[in-house]
Length: 387
Ligand SMILES: [Zn+2]
Image (cartoon, rainbow, N blue to C red; front, top):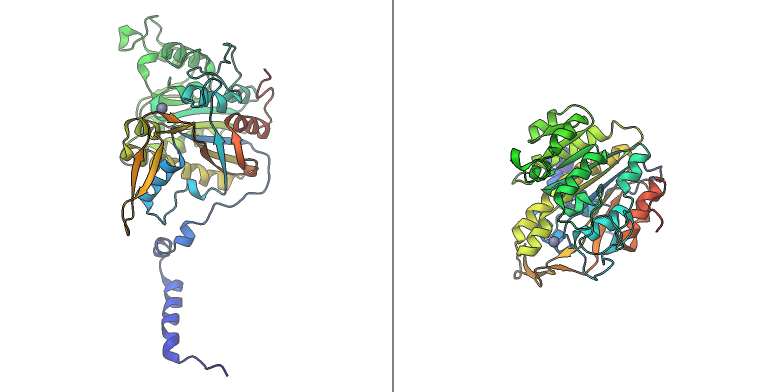
């Protein structure tokens, strides 16, 4: 026969219920890892109007995990990790099982593999149509942001320019002036300026002035960026810092400007620190960079959750450093980082997806497939272009 519980044994339960009813939300959020770890929902299929592609340069699963364990603890969750669909991406280039950022970004930007160091040109040096070019032709707004690299760096360049070698910074800057990309933010103004005006260009062109005449607001600080009017912005600044207000502000501003285009937009945001930290075996740079990337992704996810027609993708171009995470002793809440190389590796990288049709990004993918699925979802013409 069941025994009725004594009143005193119910007492802790009553206290717990009263606590749950009256505790402030913030306290509950902090205490309930279940709520913080809840994945973003799988959205119903809808036409994809906007795509945001975040590229953690050199970001393998170990880089992401090291950063999250350090910032949120072993039981914590980054926003990136709460995206509901995941995939693995193979990264080999046309001429090497180990890629670098130019060939890897070309695969994401054009849907074709090329040789290492080439920027959106085929191995036989033909121009490859980029997703930014196809999106612009369809009337979409476009944006390229690198949090800490030069605008003429390999990753942003591959989305809007075509050169046979990634070192051709001045030619890349010249091509940006003709690209029509609405928002361009990164470092390296010197490649846009003549050597007579503090730049490095020998051809005497002032590409900054040329772009101003084409209607770009040129800004050099986050305050100037946030105050910028109009739909075209050229920003020269680093968004990396110890707090994450810069990258959050820049992401919000980019979304605010690009979303004025009712046909939709394509935005790529690159975080270069996981690659830099992987090359120099600097795990603190990796941790800081990915934490800032996660803050930017969280802004994107909140936008996409409300919009319901925006696909958010977070991935890497390749892994850097051959990073392994070893235990730091029983009870430790952090890990020891061990690098096996100072270069890139051939290990596949993770991809996280949220938004309508995110489910297309499951299983093992080739990096070129990421581009072809994006082109299909945005219904872009001649993309990827046939070869
Ligand atoms: Zn690298």
